Length: 457
Image (cartoon, rainbow, N blue to C red; front, side, top):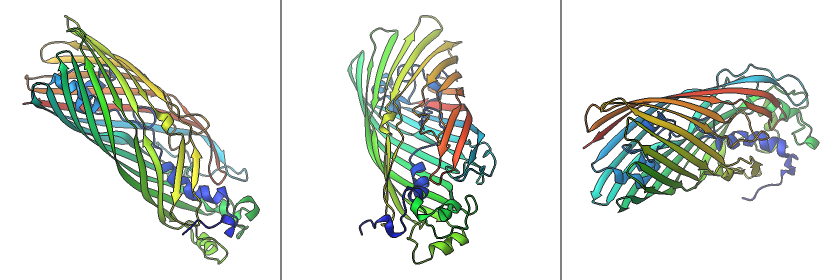
């Protein structure tokens, strides 16, 4: 069935955007441990030094996920399990007004952050003298925020949950004793669950000429709140390539490129509509909007590239660095298609920018059994001030990390890592689809605590 003209009730962007706000939010994410909605927690050993030398330091089976070429450094079978708890805090300070200038009711939303567990598992097998095979499971994107249901920013965001899970198969070839190449195939599943309030009071009261219904002028903004929720998921294939070069016995350089993965999220939108609004929408002149139905949208997890360096000294200290780039500019527009033929499609501009991450870190070998680690890092945010909103009040962040490694035998290793994130304030000046303006700042911070075990056999 073709899209019906919006002149049925002269609906315009006001009602359209009110319907779409939950779906639009489904394709962005809450504050994560890295910039945007990226998660890097698949190696506790490297986290202990702020990921400096993540792909080049050696003895870390997570390279099956992060750089397949480095798997050639393993001469035996190896399995590694990493688990990280991410505690994200985001607290709003500010105020707002509705479409007629009245203060937005509700509090500050409480702490919108949460504690989430991020698992990862890696496996490497030497299948021939110069060949290695690897498998891995990790969560490269996601996290969750949830504000109080009646907070002043409820018309933009209440709950935001975004999760991506990668299933990676990798192969490595030792071209020579000092140079190797690797390739990975990735199956990625992305799942979303988003909700926000809908200001039906504004929609019902707005005259037809201004884009509303004009059927119930006795309504006032904030007088009839409903709820919108969207859930969806998608599977897609991706790939990465890697290389490792050892110019000297003490130095290792590694390079990795992870291609962009294009998703088409398929899901459903669900609406809770107050009885007073249901009565208005039941009138013959009202179009069939705010009805449960299918929705879909295009979205890409970005391309990324990294260069990793590690230097082993003759003494107890080894050190390294990491520089990585993430192509967040791929998230420039959000296109949403609604199965409801009375609901026009959406094209919303976000304009994110590409980002850089850089870190320096070191290991200090106390003995054959114990190793201490530390590192610092800086991570840019892809968000821009004009499009930042409560769903992702992201800002650039500084890292400080510490770790300890314990190797009781040649076959077993344990690692503990801790990172604190100093995140800048996420300033917002956001106007919802129904004209509700939220102005203020989000105080953000994060703490990561991880534990891993590796077993060689």
